Length: 363
Image (cartoon, rainbow, N blue to C red; front, top):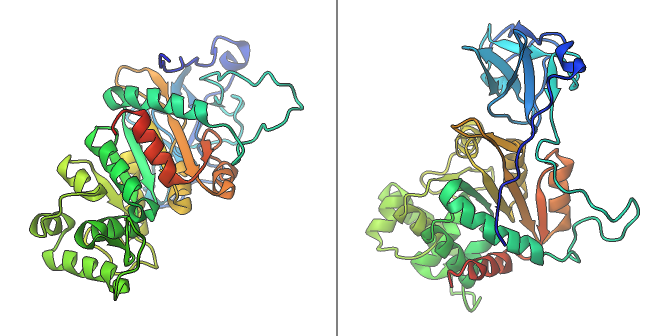
């Protein structure tokens, strides 16, 4: 299979409905963190705004944010980050009637020819995913050299010897450009390297160790003693695992904390909005995102990920988004929350990552 990005087709703005459309309207924010009445909320799709007769594309987007006109360009900003006086787009139509066009079909995916009535049109545990794997192999090989691959992970990978090793190989092989996770993934991955357990169970035999329920706390405590994850890895001679590989290969990782966290590890971000900002820094230039076994992190990332990216040369390219989970509910919930472009794969994530690594020839 020869992988090729889909070409992007912009709207035909020579059509009468666009040439006759009014200019977009921009009103000042009345106060910090407050949008003007009638503000336009952004979507995951490319959006154009008519300014001085030209249709300008917002260079990035994020669901539920607002468009701000500044310096001759359109920025997309969370409402909480607005400053009084920022010029914010207003208008709630999407067809040009308010000088705003939302363009959901720019990549023109091939439509199903099975007719209106057909079996198995959804994606469930009965779906055949062989083609998805084949496409992923080619996509990831392309993105390793030409894009940015961001992974969003729950702690399930740290509990299994083979899955943990498989993802470590992906990092070492250059298929991971950023990692978004929580305290648990890093804690149990480091616990596995430090004490060969995850939540007190041996990561290979699954045998519970005496007083094993202390192991993750001891790992956190020792990391806090050293002052940072990097210092813990260095001083305790850690030589394996997901976080070890990220540190070794200088792959950035964002650990967003939650109310239930033990410890947490040093470097875990306790402020939810700071964590959101740090996650968005990595998502901003991502071209492929793969979310696995973490519903809340997945939905959060999906909400801040558009379907497109504008490259430095002005090319508009597609952003690929995958949600992998053993629960169909999680895969479907992502679409329900507005991330309509997400591709779902319903399977055990530990098996998924091992299969993916083998398919890429890394083991």
